[in-house]
Length: 374
Image 1 (cartoon, rainbow, N blue to C red):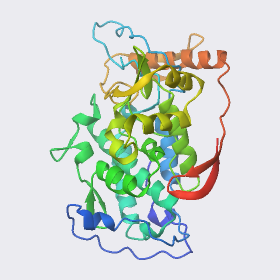
Image 2: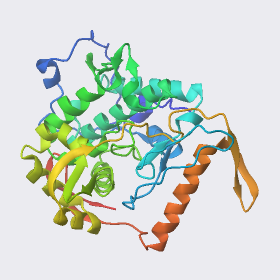
Image 3: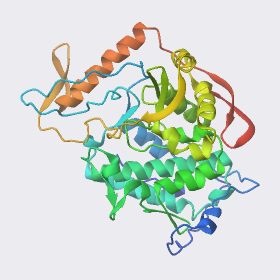
Image 4: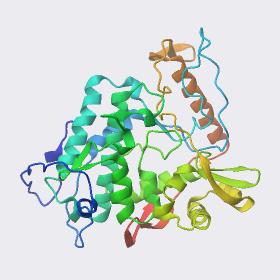
């Protein structure tokens, strides 16, 4: 799989491609620098095609399915060893997982190439003059591509927050350059998107590489699906153990909400509960009604991969009815996939199949524009 796309085939504008302009000298982002990313008042009709990234996500991201609000049991040690390989987190059957351990060096290198192509896109089209949803999709995709790239380069590693880029923690490292301005993943989230898009649903687009955070979607974001994917991410997270749970009659919530309180939840408990209620399913609605407070104490920093951030030396074949059907994979991965299959059977038993439709959803930052989300 290669992600060489790239920008020329990715721009679907008025039919003309502008010549790439030179990258400006890199600088630390001050307020004046960041102000350049403010969305323009009159949007253009230009679009960016992310079909290459879309294909990649469908190939390397595995969904663990909706939360059953049940802690996963502690797994047994790998056969033939007392060491515990693979994931042990109680949240391991929630969200999505990335197959980092199956990526070869060429695929990993293509992530860097694709990230640079997305950066260069801003030298070809005026990002700020795109529609607001097109801009939002650009920033989310760029952030997530950069995170996948750096985690893939560092793998095997237990927790993404352990990764250093030129000696700087990954989330703070300014290795992304857009219009000559150096940005970190945190800069993109907090100093651009959270600054210009005021709906807290945008939080759920950003993947941090951790089990305890919002999921990496199996689709690339674009102007047409950004509302649908953000609502899907919100519902997945809000209605999961890693998003909200109860202890002693108190509502416990993810640390993510406290981290972003200054942007979206100034009256923390009141604002957050209203936000959670917007996406709550029946179980979560009952949870909100039966608890008090809002304690931001839930966190899980383990890597959201398929193997637990450690390369296991023991393998086994995937079998069906006793017959080997595929290549050999680590025992811990096989065990996780068996747990996943058991969970899916329970979802079917409970009749929780099908789709949920949210109608008349306001798109982030675009008042008056609506979309049906499935």
